[in-house]
Amino acid sequence: MKYDVGDRIGSYQLLYLCGEGAYGRVFLARNVLTQHQVALKLLPLSAKVTARELQGLKNYRECRHPNLLQIHHIDQAEGVLYYTMDAADNLAGTGGGYEPDTLAARLAHRKSLPAGEVAKMAAELLEGLDCLHRRNLLHRDIKPDNILWVDGRATLADIGLTTDSRNASLVGTPGFMSGELLSGKRPANREDDLYALGKVIYCALTGCAVCDYPHYPQSVTISEAAPLIRAYTAACRSPSTVKSSQEMKRLLTAPAETVARRRGGAWRWAAGLLLPAAAAAAVFFLSWKTEKRPVEARSAAVPVPPAESTVAAASLPEPLPGGALPVTELELLYRNRTSGQVKALLARAERAEEMLDREAVEKLGELNVHEMTAETSRMVRGLILKAREEHWREDPLCRLARKEEQVKAFLAGRRSGGEADVRAFLALLNERDSLVRTCMKLNDDKR
Image (cartoon, rainbow, N blue to C red; front, side):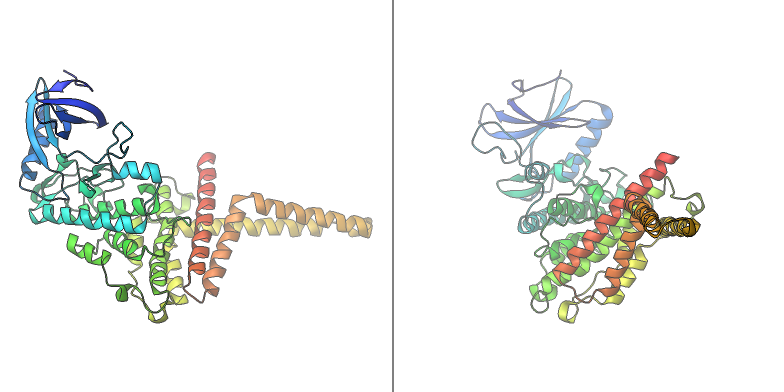
């Protein structure tokens, strides 16, 4: 039997459909005897789905924590397994209707959350995770849809994939799973829950999709976000430098003096951390894209470092005296992001620019100035140079070459770690990434 809004199952009447997935549906329900409202999950009674969900419930039964969703009743009826749990707060308010207060819903309404709200959410979720991990359990599916607020507390939900850490299989949501886990290099462990939470923090803080990591939009204020950036960058490295929920919580709650030195130190620390993340963004895109379709056939054999190893290569910086980041550090970051594929694309762009210059010089050399008046000669020369300029502006490879020159000039001339410098650097990287995508798309279309 398929249950829907208005139906009754056991002593529960189904009020609203909150969501549905591949295996089940979740309703807001009311106990007709006590009038207590709960969330009720319905699953078909199939051997595979039921066994996995029941095992998750059994694993979870001893976990009683205010930041973990509490299970109240488990039963079955007419072809379905169902259980009740805490209902999420109503995001719709008192105006009628019901919308569960999940992180996914908050981001849909507001795009991103303030740093203080994200920090509070992360701290509360880490408390719940610590309770799970101390019992050798893994959640395995931390993502915005599975984070909700109950009585104003951030709470981990959807415990159907919860399992013992000693025999955890490969399950989860792509984007919130580490490269090491997806590649089968090791079995799942608690670091994978922390990795997923790091990605959740990134999405909540920036408003970006998880696939955009580690891109940081210029429109988002970052002056108060240094501890959050530090925590999610450390958790999402490969290999991770965060081994427990307590370690991640310490990163989020580091005393002010360890994050800031002198006036403006908090910003400069965040700037130092954002630079490797921003530089890694270009490599993340290129590595993912060129693994399937190399920019040039001769560069296809060059190994592509995964995005996470690029982040790991740029070590987490400590605050420096005066807060300034040395130019040599930026040069290191630049070298770290220039993989074989990146170099091949930039070399191709440089060759395109050189070829255009050479063609313009040849055209100018072919002019028979003896058969032209001075005015005609000037006009023709002007047309040739104008055509070259227009080609520079329109040809993606030439534009990429020029943008790369701007990036190099910026890195060579940078002398401070102030906010304006970091924003200018991020803007240049974003512009260059856009040109990289254009060049690679054109290359794909030609194939």
